[in-house]
Length: 374
Image (cartoon, rainbow, N blue to C red; front, side, top):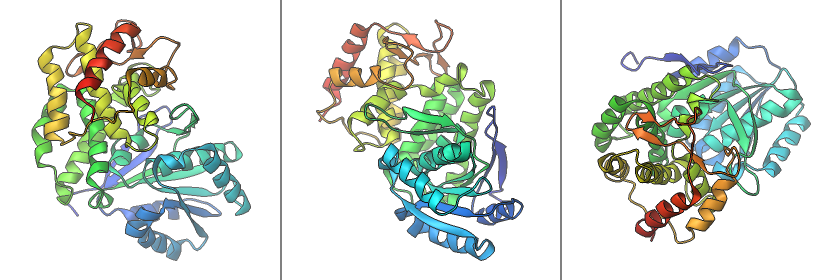
């Protein structure tokens, strides 16, 4: 479709990956695979998305590449544990996977993470291709090369960096995505505006009230703009070891909430709470103005429609304990990405992480949880 052209981008990382973005681009995937040399293809997906889109794609691939096999995985965060990682690795070995094989990850972030980590571990690294089917996957998680599973005390404690051979983001898969999942992905785009681009934040603030996934042109445009907003940040820090840490705005609080709720809240929803808490913390230590904090509530609650509250099991003490165990911590101190103003992060310590006294964090959390729980 000429009005929605295929766009070829790069992940801009130290090990960049060609990123193909468009609407109904499955033939391009087939074409790229035809130019790859491999002994076997392994199509790894989850049941719900397989029924919607994966089965048709699998049959297309099978017509062109008879040496393809299918395996259904668990969906979401329940996928991301050592037990499932070990089972998948051993299953692929039993099916004679080799260094010449290619794994295809078709699904959401849970599938992408598990398959990516499996590919990174097999024979010290084999090829895999990501085909994200969620808004979060297409606009955020596939752009990082981060592959991980969860541990007993927190998210993404065990993993590595392993770049996919290709990424194919086909927006046809987004049309039927559940509202909550789509909203979760858009949260990460809002975050990109908060941390680095005030004009992009303003665009989202004005646009989100009219978001409609069935409008394929608008979905294409919104997703592409969010992808470019993240790539702009990654381009300035391909290693994501300095400036790129700003992408974790709201995530220390958000990961703690997500972990404590054990799958009862999806990632973007948890991060939306995390950003609001981070904004309150930024205000408490004299950075953001009150009206800038209120913009967080307005765009998340009124424009995006996320007006849910946190359950009573989220307490200040439990959340602080979860954050201390967070995978990005650099010591026992609590350190956060905070905003100096909309579009700019605070950087007093040179690494875009701000050390905050634990009593100040407790004060902010006590007040926030009092007003944002069932």
